Length: 170
Image (cartoon, rainbow, N blue to C red; front, side):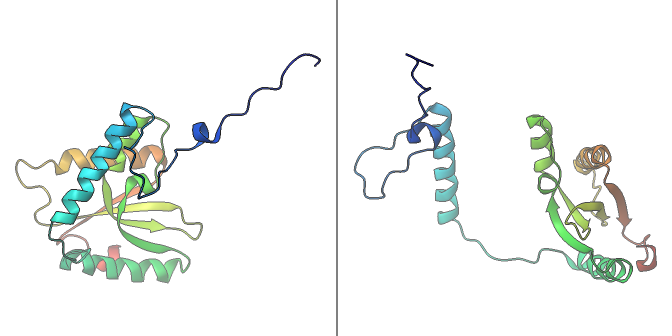
């Protein structure tokens, strides 16, 4: 290796974004327009949240809460190491190298996810209440995306229909 220089190590600035001190009077510097657009969108989200009135609300409505309690008891009785999770984004337990496919499922959630002792979702349940399939709604299209994504990942899918599914059937 005589006369050859070793490859130049990437600078710390190239490896990670540089943060500026809060009191720094210089304007923000971005690596590219995409980074700047992302920053401005997040700043707009923060402004919107800061100006809005927000309040807590229940995670589940009354019928969903009743299904959760019955399902939780049934799951724990059969598999003590399993857990029932409510309102879980599919993007939290599904992965895809295809960005478009991932974005399509990441924005969807299941009412209930049954998680095994290794923290892997094995089954997803959807509660179909009385207002689920109202005319003009997109529920059927959303459900089709969820069902296909879960099928391709090898995760079971079950529907709990209001007035038709008993706690014993869970």
